[in-house]
Image (cartoon, rainbow, N blue to C red):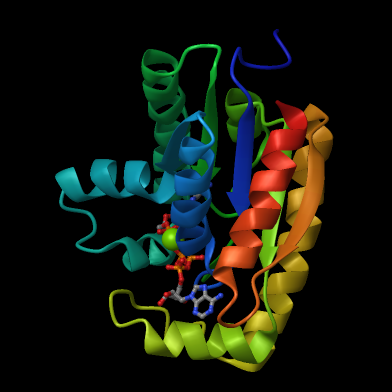
Length: 205
Ligand code: ATP
Ligand code: AMP
Ligand code: MG
């Protein structure tokens, strides 16, 4: 089995509302301005498409509430579809960034977003963990009306999820020999977090 894809792969993780998608849109612009071909794929989009087309969910924040077997089946499908799309659109010069979660807080406990069957398909060079102060994350979760994260918007839950994200990210990285980097997304400073992520990505090119 090949250890890596032709193109570099960066997997970006962090708890819901920490700012992954925000940082990635800024980082992508920066990398494109620097002449890189960047493909950002959101893992949740693939799960949502598959589940929504079968009428199982109506919005993406319902996915984590499904029974684990249903999540597992679609997690597996999503990994394969995502990497197939990446292979089709990226040459050896492109960069794949995957916007996802190291761990999902389900009603059955903490469940890995990047178990062996997933991480061995994605084969990341780096896992970047986005973090922020607990109170800022809770405020973002409450403020962002485009999503439903109110089930998680409590300081004790967010604190535990930040901790779990670190543990699960390290466990996944160990399976494929990826490095792990932590990036702080401070309030009003998404630009700076994106710049730090760009620095990490450029260091592996
Ligand atoms: P999910 O995993 O649920 O998709 P996410 O990590 O992708 O969450 P975003 O959707 O990027 O999170 O951000 C959540 C909210 O926080 C958004 O309203 C966004 O504008 C805001 N936000 C992100 N980063 C910052 C920041 N540095 N300062 C202030 N607000 C921010
Ligand atoms: P997001 O927009 O990043 O929050 O993704 C939407 C939802 O997709 C998440 O809340 C999870 O329920 C699910 N999801 C995303 N990535 C994964 C993953 N790697 N494994 C399992 N579920 C995931
Ligand atoms: Mg997001």
